Length: 269
Image (tube, rainbow, N blue to C red; front, side):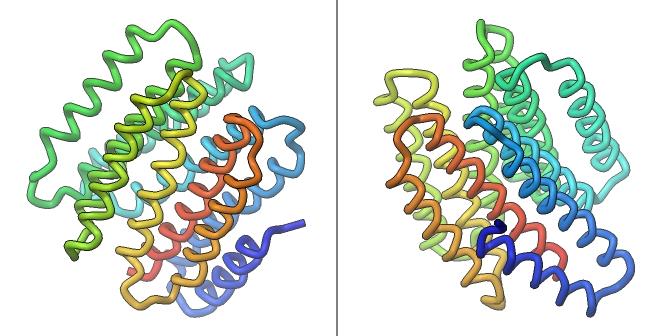
């Protein structure tokens, strides 16, 4: 059964498709394909690791679509297309869900790097973005397990999303919220006693940053009820989760839903 949010998103897609240009129509068709795949794979998943991969993979697809739409140069678009190609090859070479999760979180880091550069109109965050990417490469070289690699991908994605959120912030309240998320990110990393707990920290901070980005982009308030629905589900599922793997699914799934809203917001620009 489709969740209430997915039904609302599908209805919103239908309404948008009836009023936009052919180019935007094609973009919305691709968003809908990703939502459909998200729902189908979830229904077919028999374990939390499979659901985690579903979440990570759909995030790669959604942000690749957003990054291509926002590409200002052929070089940026080609960079996204290369990531998509590596994403497919990485999946083909993976022999387990943990390896697929690494593929998803690593490609997500890479596509968010491209998007962060695209949205950095004045080059204000260029050094920070390149520094995050260098940390991503160094941590990958020193990681000795898929769990450590996936944590690396999730953590770098949090840092890149914080930059994207700052790039779109227009009020002191938004900037304060972003700073608060980063403070929680650092504190929870220090208190985490295992890599799975670090992964939850990464996924949960991603959800919170995507929440603020979706609100920043919602200049007309059209998506407010959808965003609030995701926030409510995020809190409810966290309260009911009995393990770190279930919490990780919650964070990744809510991130997919917020990324879908962000994709729809870009369709209206």
